[in-house]
Amino acid sequence: MAPITTSREEFDEIPTVVGIFSAFGLVFTVSLFAWICCQRKSSKSNKTPPYKFVHVLKGVDIYPENLNSKKKFGADDKNEVKNKPAVPKNSLHLDLEKRDLNGNFPKTNLKPGSPSDLENATPKLFLEGEKESVSPESLKSSTSLTSEEKQEKLGTLFFSLEYNFEKKAFVVNIKEARGLPAMDEQSMTSDPYIKMTILPEKKHKVKTRVLRKTLDPAFDETFTFYGIPYTQIQELALHFTILSFDRFSRDDIIGEVLIPLSGIELCEGKMLMNREIIKRNVRKSSGRGELLISLCYQSTTNTLTVVVLKARHLPKSDVSGLSDPYVKVNLYHAKKRISKKKTHVKKCTPNAVFNELFVFDIPCEGLEDISVEFLVLDSERGSRNEVIGQLVLGAAAEGTGGEHWKEICDYPRRQIAKWHVLCDG
Image 1: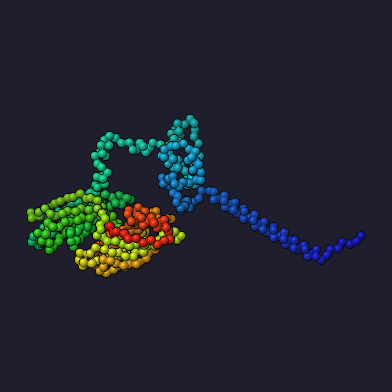
Image 2: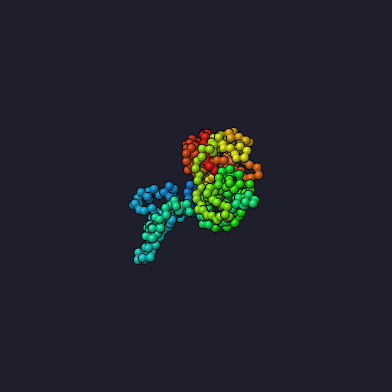
């Protein structure tokens, strides 16, 4: 019998084959381990996520009362709406309130013979309709006062006027205000104070102290203005501005009172007076000047570039004849100021050239809830700077402000400049 012989080439091929099979085995083992890990991770993700994760989902509200037809949880919402018959919106709202954080409906086991369960399971479709039903007496009272008249009920201001002939001084005593509206929605109170100006020269400007958390402030503060002849009193007018102090943003304007002094005789002594506070008139004025603004929205970086270029035809100040203008830029998100910038002061000019650029980071996607306010102020040493004019750019702005805002939203990454007429600040 012949002996079995193997060549050296066959011995050299064995380690190569073993190496190949080992490599395939290692790849298969790693792939199997990765697949098991992914299955475990996906099973964990199907569970209810923590509250913080759901809360930071962009564009989705987790609170049932904020859910609307635009964005809802669950992927089959559209199919469910199509299959459902037409029902009032209130029932849809109540159904959404029963969802959990993932948008799933909890299973409810109703007993067929339990009337209490049937009452709880039946949605209260006409709950809001019952609230809207009112008695005939309330209808009479509502029709007697129009909505405009209700809005104009801003309280009453009590004050007194007097002229001191010995000192040739005009004396104004701001006593109190009653029935002011609440400007703070959380505490339902206000922090009122009053500014007073003697028109038309606006040389005499005073203000009371701030009284905290009250709708019926009792100021009882006396202001004496010397050097005003009695014969000149008839040509003057008093302008009261009632405000509510706000520590974190601009003070809220409650209303105003304008008192022409023509026909008021102060020779017989002190005169007690009261006037209803009316809403401040914010009409556009052609004498406020114009402002040239350039805007650019960068959608990739979610930033807004604002360039304050020029101002022209600014009104002259009463004292020096020329104003020292500068521009304050406030960025608002949902009526809350989140950032502020300001330019340098330009001395003694009604036509200022600023050319200053500011970049704002937008805290949300898009510019729907963003607005920019421009305040042109006159820099004055030793006193509070007077507002020359105001400009607001945003989605809700009217006129050129809304048009400019729409253009930068439609054409991102493009610098667009426009002239805007300033309004009374």
